[in-house]
Image 1 (cartoon, rainbow, N blue to C red):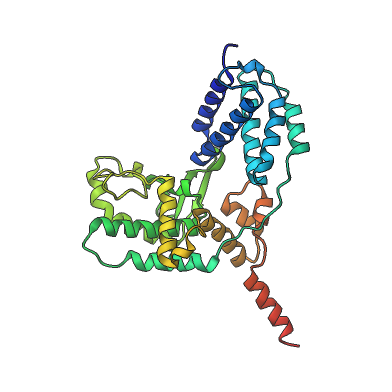
Image 2: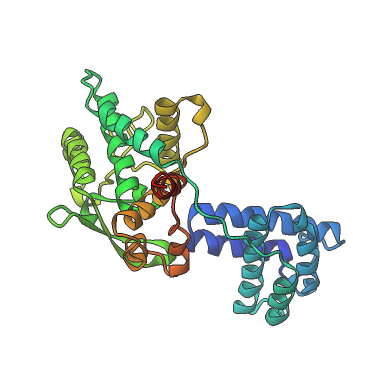
Length: 326
């Protein structure tokens, strides 16, 4: 087939763009950029060689190059490269030996150590309190008031639902069942899931949308299709545009710095709020792994088990309760 390796990679990344998240696409692009570089270094330039010239040897070269990266990055990049070979097979562009590829990766790739999820629980609660207090400061600037209310509702949504940042950004008004306090979303793996909202997160969303009601009504669009969290900047004008995943991250970064100071920059991300949610469920439920798994929408309970550990504070308290009595 008269198609170059580079064109095949570009077509593969397009399928990733259509089916996966922005974060996944970004990672896969970086992986395949390195893959192309490795081919070039091994005298197989991707823009000049047809796809039938690509062999399993390229995976061996790729594995060698990945020793300079972290085990986590290595695993992600190998997943992207394996996906590329699977794409070639599925599209009948070539007939790669997939079993040999998987065998090579199994034998030569480094094993990931299991890390306990880390997050500063008290700092997250401090940020939440700061956002709540900040949201209801009176101001004559309507755009500023809307941003404060939106940010508060957004942070409470992350903390109390376990939604991933892109899932929260994609919420529409029609997704929420206001009576039941639930939303039906399309989550990871393109699965339909039910997410539950706390009373405080629902109140915050209602307060925000109440102030935004005039703008929503003037949009000329059905309320159900409008985003829950919209932009309030000069670029958006009077249109109701959803915030992006990048905007969601920026909201968290802004409140981390405002509430905790510049030295805390980068210590808390949107995913930290998901860790907070899962650990809170486990702590309050007495370690009910099945409940935490279902509410966090983990496919594998082993993922949830990573959160089932005592915090240092709880270990300290348990220790002193035992030994102070002696």
